[in-house]
Length: 157
Image (cartoon, rainbow, N blue to C red; front, side):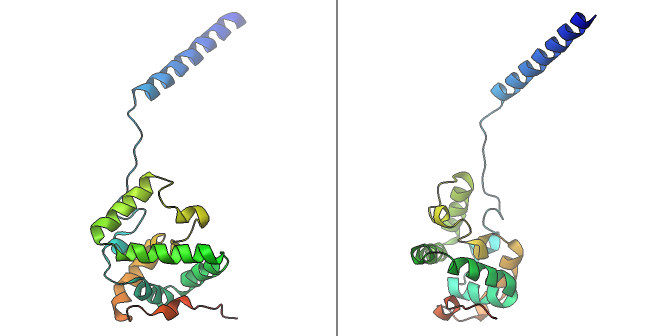
């Protein structure tokens, strides 16, 4: 009786393993792509604001989120801060089609964004929170373009 049960159990396990192998061998290649809001929210892709306008708006509409980003930034080496600064300005210089392509590239290739290898959250203020992006892009056009003072941030006591 025990031998019969073991034989049935073994056959069941082999059948399950065979089904698993068949399912994975018949499945198509895995694919991923960006959606309208991932990894970069659509509002960020289409905004006409510049980097500093967006940051000033984020500072005023989501102050805690802005402060966390700036604290995280200030804890990075100067060269990494500069790399992130240059990269986000590059992103804002792109037209919506190129921004969308960038979003697609970052969604499908983990190694595409070199800045992220030095600071994983380098663009958190800009890409990672649809709510922050929505609030900031709604009002960013009301801030002056190119106001670099937004980068001069110090923690409040």
